[in-house]
Amino acid sequence: MRQGQASWLAVALMMGVALPAASAETASTKDVFTPLTAVPFNPTTTPVPGTDGKWHFVYELQLANTRPVLATLESVQVTDVPEAENAADSAKLGRPVGLLANRDERPPKVLADFGAETFPDRLRQLNNQPAENAEIELNATRLFLIDLVLASQEPLPVQLRHVLGLTGQNGTDMTNLEPVQQHYPAATIKVTRRLPVLRPPLAGTGWVAFNGCCEPGGAHRVTSLPVNGELHYAQRFAIDWLKLDGQGRLRSGPASDVNNYAGYGEKLLAVADGVVVETLDTLPNQVPPNSPDPSTINLQNVLGNHVVLDIGDGFFALYAHIKPGSVRVRVGQKVRTGTVLGLLGNSGNSSAPHLHFHITDGPSVVGSEGLPYVLQRFKLAGKIPDAAVPPDLGGDYRRFLLATPQPRSKQFPLDMDVVDFTR
Image (cartoon, rainbow, N blue to C red; front, side):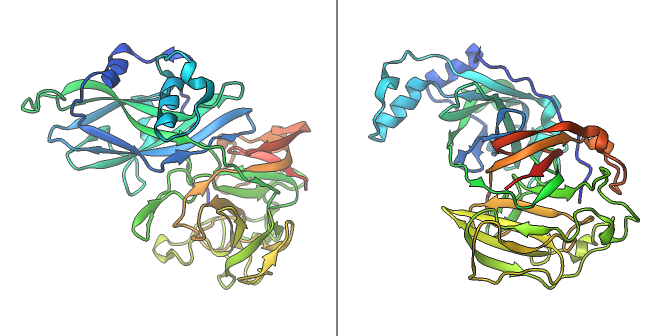
């Protein structure tokens, strides 16, 4: 279930720093060849407020080398787009621009600067494996995972842009095959504010958000899947919820018995009114603490017994790894918020009883895009360090709990947060 996540790589957030002159000039000069191209994996990104009081942007870029000279990626900067340019874009589309058109243009602000030291988790091959190095050959494609964090008091940008730093083919003399260093802007992505507000999918205290947002090396974060002719990051914001018992333990007996895990058999609750669009209830539990043989996993059984709810406005909620025979709803059934859908289990690709929960933009459990959301209210009860959790999930975690849980509203739980759910 938990797959050896790499430690968080701290990235300096440089608010208000002007873009280097060489990069800013590129945007205003005449056209040049840019050997390494970058496009957003999706056209928009939606920031989500986390329990740390900050905004989290989670998205990807697709990088490709179009020239015969090897391109070596050295940095990826994330910048905002000045208001004057946003106003100009709006005017082109016939939208009212208000006071924006009267504001002075300024250089873009660098919001984050991802250097080569961050690449082991961020720069990925199409098979979800880390890139062996930062070199990208002709016709090769890489994925670059971005988790941008902004302080809550900072105004949210309307668009984000990226500046690539690399060594590659000369952009002005295409007969010159000697690599040169370049910096240029690419890949503009629009920022949206479309966040569903949900009720909790579980009840009670001591729920731990395993494999959660937004670490670039996390098991869910790095997983894209080629489904129906396209790559999808359905699990971009997925969480594996495991429960602590009254003694701060995830399990209280031998690891091989699902009944020894505190969360096993807990009720799974509808996070909103909706319609059931898919169920599966026939797969057996796996025997923890081992994951199933990878050769036995396919698109039909990877998430085990599960329920998918259409909760409206283009949002779909997935509940996975449900206890065999416990699904209580049927396809086409309308459910109300809080309806019991099934019981927490250990079916499918799972090594310990937990609820895998995520929101997507389509009914396919893996062939859709994962979307952020916020919970209407809950209490933050603590945070457990990754290093404190052994592979068999044994131990007492009470030392990581807060004496008084903190009430939270309209936030998204982050990786290894301990949450008390209220409804």
